[in-house]
Length: 192
Image 1 (tube, one colour):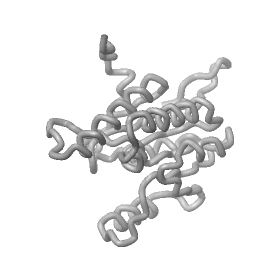
Image 2: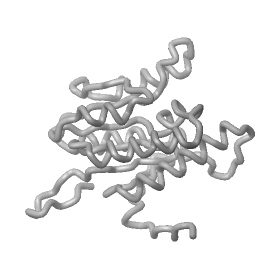
Image 3: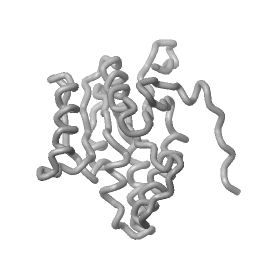
Image 4: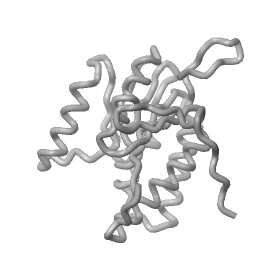
């Protein structure tokens, strides 16, 4: 779970990705990793509030009830990069989730989207606190029926690969089981 520091002491990885399909347990695993860190946890929620959607409100309520009361929570929506700049080294940020952050920016044209992605990657590199980022897995076999669905799948997949390249820990969570991808996986060769 934790990497070693130069002194041999365990330390929290700077960037941990936790991905998986819907209802597979990825948020619970990310919360477990955050709780085990021993750091002050700040939950950064990237999703919309959607007060008129009872299903979404029920999901938000389940997440709130699982979180320890001492954890901070900031609803950052699409402004994740700015929120990362405010974190302190003694904190750990649990970002839930990359998919809702991507969804908040689906209307951006490719150039503006690339700018937003670069800003987030730069903010992650500069962030003084360790991060645990929850990412949805999409496109596991079904081709989206709409252009916006394809855009979401493609943008999220590309962002996941970019962030994985900078991660010290990467987990795939499905069917309630967490798999350490860096320990078990091999990198896919890049496109030429």
